[in-house]
Length: 425
Image 1 (cartoon, one colour):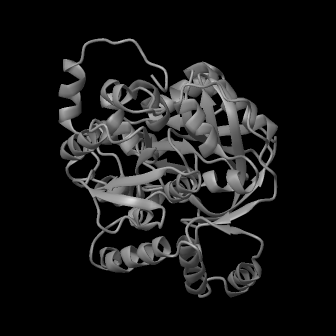
Image 2: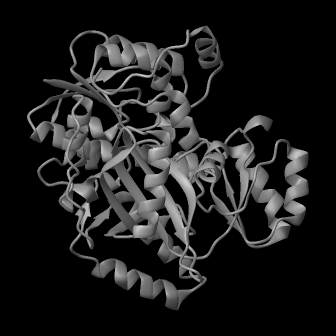
């Protein structure tokens, strides 16, 4: 049996490819960039090159649909933000292959942070106070009065791109409009301003079937990039009953099927979880769940087959996974940070060198080429950080980030109303 996998710049994709291969499936991949590292796994039987989604979303979708509708594949596993683009073609995809692709409206309620804020309110889950300016002038008025510190966040993005925490009001406007300029945001997609809550972060990943949680993993970030808060690069599995219950309420409310995850900040004074982000896709915690005894890929296959799988085992606590290349950049930044705080950074570096008993997201002695290719990709793109105003958080995810396009509006307006289908149909 053949499975087609996309989203090859997401570390979890590599784990999915390896598991599909180990389970006996023939894995093919499709991507718009020649250095997409996950496609170089030894478990990939064939790599298809299609147009780059970032620059040519319509051609990307058309090329991917040709593969999906060719009759060559039994399963389709979208791993990153192409899931948003391809959801516009959901009826065609579920007619051709087995998958767990939700409809566009459901996905955007998680992906668009403005819609996500409303979703949390509807379900009755605490969120930090959030301001959503509708114009640059309104944003300036909000910034004049907003309580500091405050987080600047893009409404539609991943991997902490455009994320800033500002403590000084004199820097707030400049930081805000730097995010607007670097990410080329228009007046309809201005960044939000969100109350900053001090406390540890709990992140989750869930495999769901028609609103029920089949398997889950929860973890806390030990180190992040950017270091002020963003993508976790060293993480450890935990159990957090309050966050698990809050996530389950959203999943039930959406009647969600597939993989999704949430980020909570635990107020250090009250212990209450505040919901700050949602992911309508797989995350790097996929490998953590596996090493903790909860194989979400096997469960995903059962759901795609139209079965109702039994609940998966609980993920063990204390399992650590590391995104090697990003954690190495963290170490380099620590050496640079020594000029400001030698004692503190020295203590952090000593801990870095003492780290042990963890699993790598990408690096593997038995499947080494993906790790080599991610370093090739990074080194050949570092010039952007020097010669352009490129957001460093997008260095790794830039080529696989969803971009809205006018053709999607035309597509949506031309679609007849259809009943929602279940996975495996």
